[in-house]
Image (cartoon, rainbow, N blue to C red; front, side):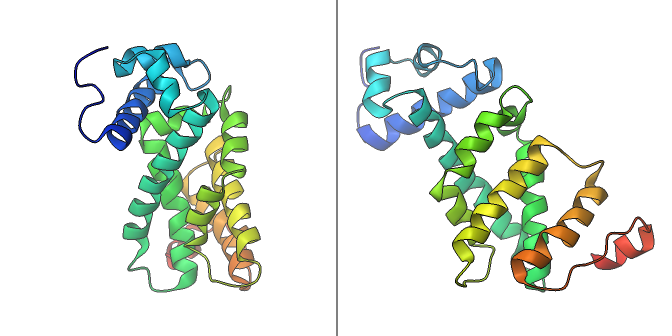
Amino acid sequence: MTGDWLGGNRGQLAAERILDAAGRVFLRRGVAAADMADIAAEAGCSRATLYRYFDNRQALRIAYMHREARRVATQVLAEVADHPTPSAQLTGAVLAAVRIVRETPVLAAWFVPEGSGATAGLAGASDVIASLCGTFLPADAAAAGKARWLVRVVVSLLSMPGRDADDERAMVEAFVTPVLLDAPAIPVTTDPEVETSRR
């Protein structure tokens, strides 16, 4: 716990190192079970040092969630940049965000049944996450409310998945994209040819 642990670019470097350690603990122990002592030990610092950067466990969880949400949003933006229409971009963004979280073990750990309620509460109350979701929506008078609703849609799909990827795409195309873009709803169908023609 001595030496140059906090040397150099103290603030940002130390906070990033702590968040990296937190991610490893979340993955190993689960988000709900991870405590500040575990995270300090993983980071190789004292608990006093940890509390210098994060007031409590909730603050640390929020910081971790915000950092990872920014990373996911950057990946999603790159993935949907060449989609030809706003509708395709929004549908693609929702489905890409869900897929990326599921494919990232430490992020998927936030949506296990015993912790998904707390995760939903943190995400739903986050102005940062709502703002990131807002980048996929048109700017209008209802943009802030739509962005918050989009957060809830993504969290809902992560907490209660559809039957398969086609089922989730159909739900997003029928009940999410048209509402958020004020466009006509696409009827839900189970016809594989129709599903293919939408993509």
